[in-house]
Length: 262
Image 1 (cartoon, rainbow, N blue to C red):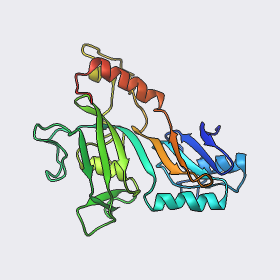
Image 2: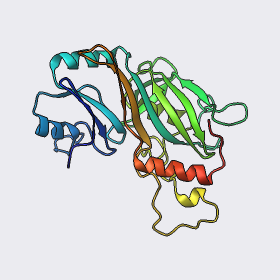
Image 3: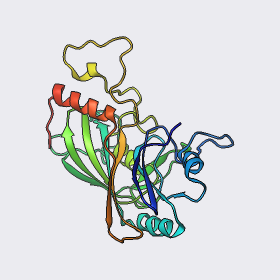
Image 4: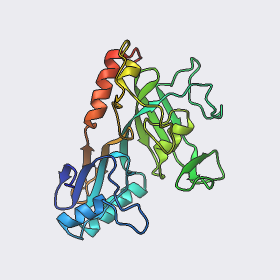
């Protein structure tokens, strides 16, 4: 498999636009798996190190350091929460009658998703479901905060800008799912039956027996990062465009859905 597109490269840093489905490291215990680390080391040698992680299912920006000083400097920014991070997601608005705790549902007085909202529920491992995380009000897990801006509201589906202020495992996926807004196509925290099909949004379109979802990947993309460059000490703004299927889905929703845009 070829390397993902390179967004930025110089003597100290290498930044990719990682596709969904490619893990950063092998995730299968005892069995080698195609992963970005192996690809990078095969092309650039063993001297590079990844600075941070993305879930295998999440697409978007991932930063590598070419030198030990660059690794220490940039990874320190992630650890100290000095990095500005923006993700974009398509979420599914669950009906209020779904079996969700009433004190976690994020809706305004009109029953709509508010244009601005923040979630600061703690996140820890779900002891009942290995491999999953869960939210805690307090006294469990670690502090986690995510800020959200609704960019476009299409009724059942909402396009959201996500700004994680901390970096817990699965943070955005867990926070949004607990709020009654699971990310589209999240098999771990959402409902795999809630697909985004053209027949769902285009009135009178019956579809085909083999109709495919407009978005097949986990609908979460790491779009922007702002870090301080390890050499120049100047801000470095990085941007990864939305995957083409996101753009196609948004174009169709804008055309066929009646929704509020912000």
